[in-house]
Length: 216
Image (tube, rainbow, N blue to C red; front, side, top):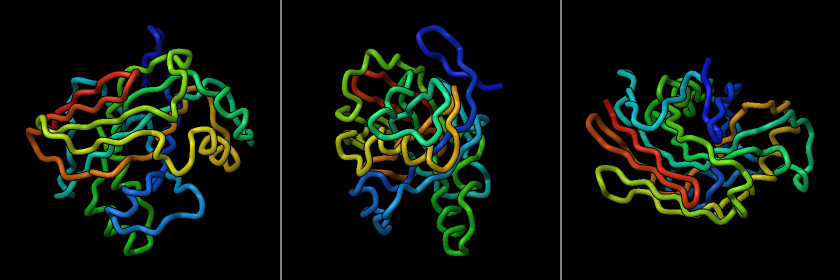
């Protein structure tokens, strides 16, 4: 069982729903096409590690990338919700990393196969403690920053999302039910890059907190 902390309470995690290609500059840097709908994939709860823990890159990859993301914690069942009401289902926000085995992902894409082995390996979802939703007045204007060994790699803002948090929740819930304890990762800004053994990563989101992890 994997849990996350929200204001001193431990909440059991269900599924982690991830959104790809939600920042235009990130789409450009990877040479991808702009999607007409949100790109959705998932990670199991077993991918979560906490701040202070270590990332373990699988031996079948030589190119693991960091991706800082705003994580959204769902507090009640959401099925077919409209965007106007979607934020009512959110109970917290956190700092997350969606670690990606880029070489493996590219090989899978070329074959037309799913990405899970590139996205869902153990330790691929470092996650900070969650901040209660009432402490974040406007989640669509938060600065995200990630440094590797003290050097800035990613520096973006949630205002640059192509689709808002509310729109994402509405879209995802039109396909399947979101449940209490589910987590939504909302995409990453430009600046993704390779991490290697010994690297120290510090990911921070304005008003939410800081996540610090290292690579084994």
